[in-house]
Image (tube, rainbow, N blue to C red; front, top):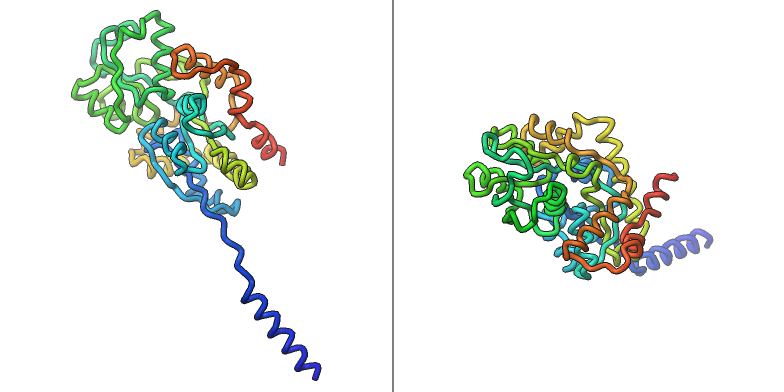
Length: 321
């Protein structure tokens, strides 16, 4: 009798479990980054070394973009949850209300360069007067840096005719002399050098020392609904930065795979990039004030905007563990 009752109870339990609705798996975290941008090496390292998986995350690359404004359009369309993107286009999109994201970690500082023809006549920023420099897009970090360099050297912004060209096409355009110079993120300046096409007129660090460049952002709705997953993404990002510092040659190999460029180019490019997760408040303030001055954004209270746009609490919690 006891055996019969035990079997009956087990049978009832199996029926109950079979009839219970299965717990829905969380949808993947849709991320984006810029095409062949060595600034985003930490993202590639986190993928290749399994740091996202180690945090229990299901990460899906939902977009590879040719410039920051394109990626911010994807956020605006609800196509991304998190992404590696330039601080300037993210700032512009949020300030103008076209996207709602929050910065949760820095990605890098410096790492861009103004490139001219290897044997051309341009030897100073003043020589850019009347010339055609190429930028990746309006309101990109590189657009900001070019305008900052011109301003520092008393060259009127109207004295140059900027042309928007995506970085993958910049080197060939410079070689054909359809532009006089270009400013881009690495590894394109390095590639122009190893190909013998261009030379660096100024590194971005010479224009603005230690300037913040790319950031890891989270869509505000995603941050609200899945805060622990955002925190786990930041942990993976921190681990990836630590890996780059501890294993630069292995990180370089990953960079070669994701950029499709040779070892000499990627090694040269990485020398021009400072990888970090520490959020730069002072750098963000300079972006806001300069972008406002250019008329790209209108922010009445820059500090209030910064306090809302930068979420340093998540990173602080991750580092405190």
